[in-house]
Image 1: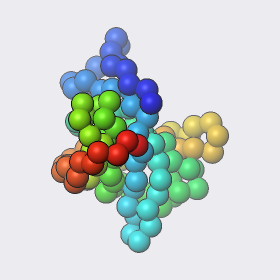
Image 2: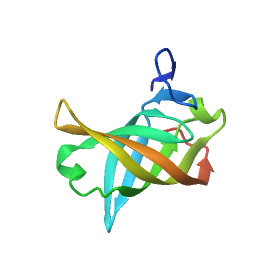
Image 3: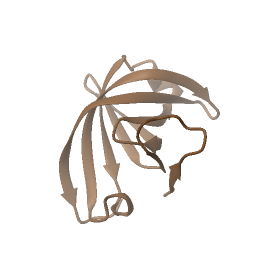
Image 4: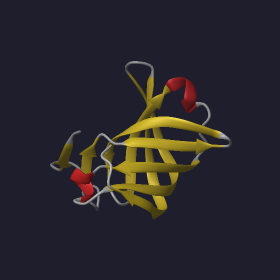
Length: 114
């Protein structure tokens, strides 16, 4: 698990954190597994298998599981509605996706660790 505040030449208005967290994208009846590179309250960047990237639309529903190191309490699942703003080809048959978070809600907190 990596957590690091990204700064320097970053011009975003809200802080983002380098977080490797599980992310699930919901596309029709399919669930696509992915993982985050970084995350803020307004956006995320995540990786998914390139073959699955063809299933993504511009608007996305996804869930992120935040570990206790981030929430400072229990594992927390956040359900998000977002809009893809950029995709990048990445090494290892992965596609990187930058998404703007439009809305989110906390689904549950549990005591188990990720």
